Length: 123
Image 1 (cartoon, one colour):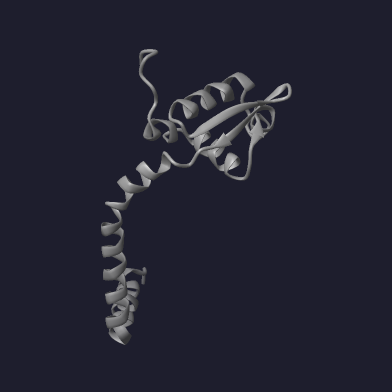
Image 2 (cartoon, helix red, strand yellow):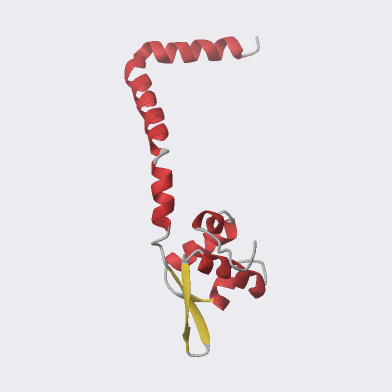
């Protein structure tokens, strides 16, 4: 990736460490030393993750005295939410089917499951 290309939200949240950083910052502004204390990696590695999150405009940093404090900027996550909302229809469809099966199975549904279980058990 060239210096002129920035990371987007999808690239930024692809890494589990960066997702954890976002969770930490959701609780409030933190200095890099506090963020680093939650991971078994160097301050330099966390700084690189914060840089990627900053490029995606998911976090911002500001100087407070001698330290830099980082803050969550959740607005870019709206793009992610919008993209994921398309796939809700598939999840909702599965839940509707499950609800239908449960409501219409009654005792017959349970007997079928029990019968299958009995036939699969060794004699």
